[in-house]
Amino acid sequence: MRLFALRGASSVEANTPEAIVGATDTLMREIMERNGVGPDDVVSCIFTLTEDLDAQFPAVAARNLGFGKVPLLCAREIPVPGALPSVIRVLIHYHAPEDHEARHVYLGAAKALRLDLEGAQ
Image (cartoon, rainbow, N blue to C red):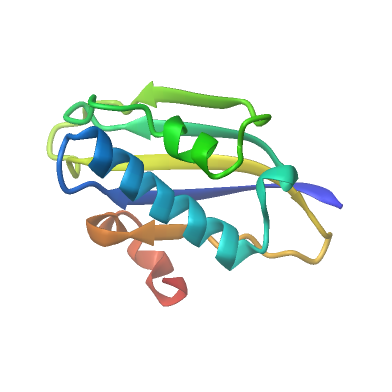
């Protein structure tokens, strides 16, 4: 086993607790499915939100998915002019077999953030 890191992002339709938790839940489930990992494999998660999202912490969704013993951190994304709004991003550190290949996940409008990964979407 070795330590890996992967990125993911998803757009959020509204600045409501339900929308933030729902988008984060979908993103985390897709990351776990594509990478064959679960909460017991994860070392830590760092979530960021764009300035327009402040109705809920995305970590709430991770806790609901069984990440209760995983250190989770939520932070504000740098407000770069012209950046895509209403986006949750995550950086996940996890253990997997040596031959594992991290599969990054970008959903919704956030796919535009990593067009180079479109084939993996």
